[in-house]
Structures are given as structure tokens and as C-alpha cells.
Length: 280
Image (tube, rainbow, N blue to C red):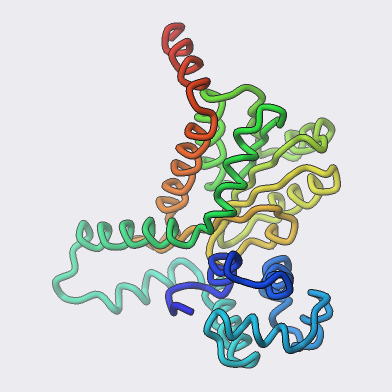
């Protein structure tokens, strides 16, 4: 397990190499992250419907020597998850050398963040997201929070160029309530939720799931509580050269998903784009 990755990221990346029973443990951890990992090993095994030795085998496969060590890592992650942006920025500034320059630091942080985020995306999960968004029989909805809503709108604008039946859910409670009235089992909800998670987004994803909607979540390495209700998860690094968490790696991940949808759809969306340009 790489120190730069959270346990959740490591689990997602390693899923394809796990046995069916080990995957059950990993998915049980991800489904209620990090709470499930802070329970006893017996309780986690019960959650996953596997034996206790299976839990240990799964941990060994991802390079964690013991259950207490996993819980120690989770407690460290919780501390990072709840740290304020100002404290994070102060910590990073304290580590900066005398030769630090904003441009150089930004180049390093953003380049590393994009690379790490794309590296952490499991191929099978990425392919599943692309297939859901490219399926013409499915209607697509997007939603986000105060800042992450920008990513939801960005994805919506591009998908609408590629295919019909794509809608952005507004920020108000009435917007969300009206969307819930129309949700059905052939719909896909793409949600964006990052550290300092928004209760309204988490609640909306949970309520959408009761309507049998397929759910995709873009989140950070520590996982929004909405992960419990997500069928597909894609996470991205949020480190920034400023006091604020960055959405730059998340935007790169969204752009990559859009590229995947274009490849999945083939030549069909190109004619749609040309027609749109002709009307502009």
C-alpha cells in the first residue's frame, strides 16, 4: 500500500486482483467508509458475509500487515478528512523551502494531483461509468454542491453535446424534489461531493437510490458519506497550492470520462456536434 493513497483508493485499485470473497470485504469497507473499518474484525467479516481469515487475507493482499494497523491508518485519514483548509495550508507553508515560488509549487501540486487521480481510477470502474453515460436507453442527471456543482454543470454541458436526455439538478430543495418525482430505474445520477461534504447532496443520492437509480459518485480520497449509496466511485486528489481544496484533478477526471464516452459512442456524436456548431 502506497503511503500517498488512502485505504479506500488502495481497495478500489486492487479490486480486480482480489478473489470473490476478498472483494466482498473490500466492498463492505468502501460501502460504509471509514466506519466499517473501525469496527471489530468479526463485525466486518459479518458485514461482508465472509470468514475472519478472509479479512486478513484481503489486508495482506494490499500490503497491510494487521487489522490494528488498518485501523490506525483509518484514524489518521479521519484526522486529515476533518482538518480545516487553513490548517492544511499552514502546514504546507511550513514545509516550503526558502526558494518556494507559487508557480513552481502549483505546477508540482496540480501535475502530481492529476497523475495520482488518474492512476487511482480502477479500469473496470471507469469503464462501467463510461458505459452508463453512453447508454442511449438511460437518462442522465447530474448534481453537486456549492463548488462541486461547477463540475456537475460542466459534465452536463459536454454530455448534452454528445447525447440527448442529460439534465442538471439545481441547488435548491425544490429542484431536487422535482427530480426525485421523475427518477426511474433506467436513470443514472452522477453526483459530486468533496471534503466538508454537503448533507443535501448525500441525502439526495440516498433518496435517489430508493428509486432504483444507478448512482455514480465523484469524490475525494476519503470518500463522501454518499459512497454508501453509490454503484460506481471515482475519486481524485484535492491538494492545492492555496488554502482551498482543488477541483483541478477532479476536472481532469471528468474530462477523461467525457473522452471515454466519445470513444464509446463512436461516430454518432460527431454529427451531433457538427449540427450544433452549424446552428450557433
